[in-house]
Amino acid sequence: MRFLRSLVLLALLALCQGQGLSADKTSIRVALLATGEKQMATYSRLFGQFEAASNVKVQLDFYSDITFKKHIQDWIELGGYDLLYWQAGNRLEKLVDAQTILPIDSLIDSDLLKAQLQTSGVDTVTFHDSIYALPIGQYIWGFYYNKEIFAELNLKPPANWREFTLLIKTLRDNDITPLIQASSDGWPVLAWLDYFAADTGGVALRDDLIRGQFGTKLQQSTLLSLFEYLVSNELFFAPKHTWRWDQAIPALLRKQAAMTLLAQFVEGQAQRLGNDKIGFFPFPYQKQVPNSIEVAPMEVFVVPSSTNKRNEVAVFLDFIIKYSAIDSLAYELGWLSVSNQPSQSLRLSERTLAANKRTSQAGKLLQYFDREAPPAVTKAWTDSIIASFNTASALPIRHLMEEKTVDIADGKPEAKELEPLLNFSTLKGLKGTFLASKILNLVYSPLGYDISVTRFPDIKSLDLGSDGILVSVVDDPGFEGKSIKLTEPLAETGVYLIGSEKNNCELGPGALKKTQKVSMVAEAIRLSYWASELGASLISQRNSEDSWRALRNGEIDYVLAFEPDLYAHRLELDNNCFIQLESISAHHFLSSKHAKLVEEVNKRIAEVKKTDIYKQYLQEFGLGVLPRKKI
Image 1 (cartoon, rainbow, N blue to C red):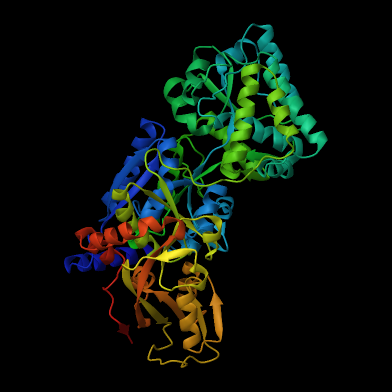
Image 2 (image 1 turned 60 degrees about the vertical axis):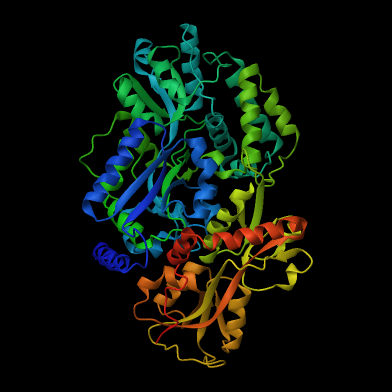
């Protein structure tokens, strides 16, 4: 039923398109991180099947790991894509906290999600009781090994660390190099840290490491001894060579080494190059315990808040949530399925079956270290571990631990390669701020500046050195002496009162009942002003999507929102009333330290407002499209 409802909505959108209200409403743009041709082919097949099953066209863009992570913030801020591949863990939580992605249970039914997906997967992407991402697969790390070498020496996968060290000894006694280590991109070496930490001090020690701390002296000593064994005993083939991760499996097949510690994203390569010659076993802990910890990163789809294709994306989410789509995507990419009832028709390799067994036995699943730790912590550990491999000594790791803590401050945003960077701050949760980002990108780019946006809950950013306020409809007293208001407004926006089905919007000042609950989509001063003017005494403080959900569910009586916020939700509010309380100018504010730019930026804003793309942006965000009232 949800899928059919989405198709009906698309039909309505097509009618709107015919009336000139919006452009190309039946297409979506999708950005995907791909590491090879197999991934590109698998994604292309999935989205091709979706196009055949719906009237939504898809533009797929593939990017490398480095390029994708470099540009994702810009894509989210400027609305370049309607659906993005991303990763669970701290990287996902940051987007949630900034309210730059939509809860997907605001687009498709949460009960359907919970019924179709494994509980562990849903829990991983749930924040503040909302599901913010669609899990599409996960994988564990472990040892890929040459089965022929193991058979010749009568070796079997070890069950614990002691058996692993005995296996290493046997390999060395037979003049076989035990391991090859991928280190070209840095992050693969962190797998050793993840498992050593979990084995030494469990989740608590790993959490300490993520925070830039190092645990107790005993834990530090144990970690150092494990790394010392690893790097000081000539266990690796050409350790100073910066091997790419995709060179490890070929090296095993050439018998340059017997094993490599890698994740299941190499499964496709293993199947293609030597399916019957490569085996897999999970990381062997010092003590084999039934309820052990496993490193199992999860891959997800997220929907940027900046998208204007909510309903088209909802149709896709309904499509992929079906068991066959989830399973085929995961297994074709070499991942583990996150479906509650995986398809029994899919043939799984021995390696995947071993990984499935491991995850089903694990009591705790962790995201990968660099998905959880601040960049400074990740870099400190990566550099130290690689230096230890290169020098065949754990001294670099010892020196890192002697620092007591790692400075976890992320620092200021890094400037782009060619253009100086201006960092503006804005409130969380307001749809119109993404319109401001798009407009100001047109303003500043010809002036030689790139822009970055930080979403603060208040105006303290001016005290923290930001270059200005992205957009505001009020002259906040906190701006005085710290910023300069650009006289040319970015746009005119309306402040709206939206009522639930059982209420009406024929209201004057002070007309709200004392018992009625009003929610604001963000902590905007102008929304607070109108809540006070209307006499609201019960104000529910929620984030944007929670406000709309509460209105739909009848938990509150009214929502106060700006025009773009209402426009984004217009198709789900058929039985609701709304009324425009005022039309107000939205202005950009530059920090006083950039006073010399004011005149030039003012002039550029005026020029941009004369362009067709500016008018298109206004239409996409609904400015001037909605009637002033719907009673």
